[in-house]
Amino acid sequence: MFRRDLAMAVLRDEVSLEALRVQATDAVTTQILGLLGLDPSEADVVLAPSGSDTELLAVMSALAATDQPLTNILIAPEETGRAVALAGAGRFFDDIAGSGAAVRKGEEAWPGRSIEVKQVAIRSPDGRPRVIAEIEAELSQIVRAALSEGPTDSPSRARVLENRAQSAPSELRDGDRGYGARRDRCRG
Image (cartoon, rainbow, N blue to C red; front, side):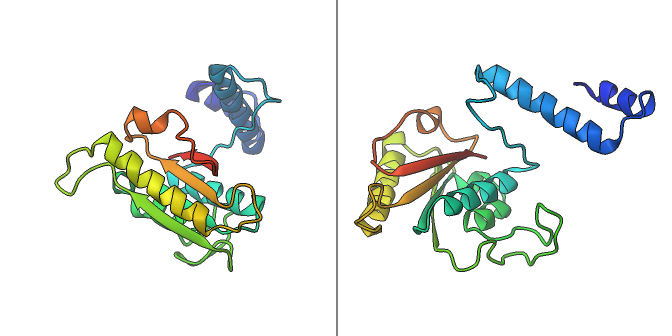
């Protein structure tokens, strides 16, 4: 669906803005599923206006799935804005929530839940890319520590949420490193 098509639907066909929003969302969702070769029954597509919104959504989804504490690993936080770090900690990053409700920036979005945020830089202090093996070792150490601190009666023992920045090296974006933890991936 092109911008021209949307404008014509409003002007010529007198489609309401709400109906137009639904049509546009359905078109984008269908296209994403098609590009991934997935049937609508195989996956849900979630659209959000920003990486910060998707980060907060991923954190809230992970919290909703279990009562266990959450360890959220933000990969390459230096490549994103400050709002992603707030969202990654389960905090509102603006004075208006995604629902339009007034909130306080920095306030817990899900009060009383335990979220530990760990950050892994992909660049050294001088701005050069870090060696992949060094980043992998740091990730492994963080995940293993989270697993050892989790409840022993749970098979996963911890829930780890990784936010992989677009600028992260492809070696970090692809593959499973076999940590044995339940991992959810958010691509911001």
